[in-house]
Image 1 (cartoon, one colour):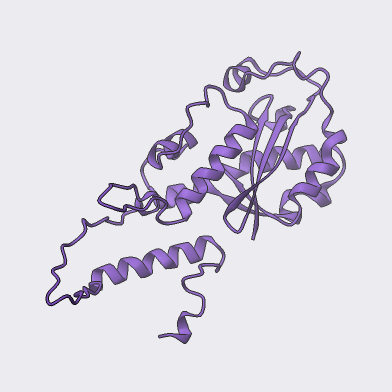
Image 2 (tube, helix red, strand yellow; image 1 turned 90 degrees about the horizontal axis):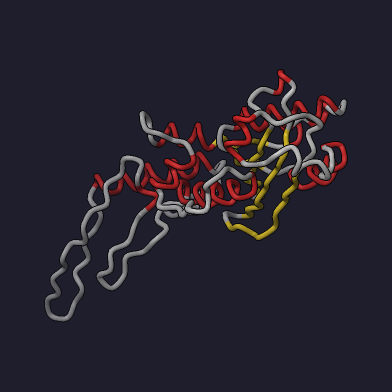
Length: 245
């Protein structure tokens, strides 16, 4: 499965008020592995940038003066994302801006929903952590993702951080606890309890097997169902399960 984790920076908040995209950052993920293949582009928006927006991302009008226009990069950008699942935090914002740029170029046939599917990680986070802060900084803190370089927003940096965060949110256990060392189970923070290891006594040199309780089995199956739902039916632990039950 090919996914593109995507973020944009803009001149302001509303495309209907004439605001434009000034930076696009994309990170490719294939079969839940970051490939190193990236798309990054600054764009001349042909207009001034709101002061409030500059305070967020630090990108100025003068910096973008010699950068290409959206029309110059559209073919490469569409080629990079076409057919992939886009992973975006607060997807309506970024998708709305991208579609606005395509409309301005008279290319509505290439609107995002016509060439890609979209996973909104903000919607996912709100389902997993209802009633809590679910912006990217809050998720980084919750999943122990290093975002210390994020003094200002940046499309590529934010896409890289979101890729790591998304994989932690959806991948189950990411750190094993071996040899008595404590580990963090990033994927088990959505209402599941991590139990302390139980002591197993060995009699006559034979290892005693302690089977999972009904409660533990229910939690395990619930987790597999969750992973299967958000991966579009690609949970490997459920594939072929009907053949062994």
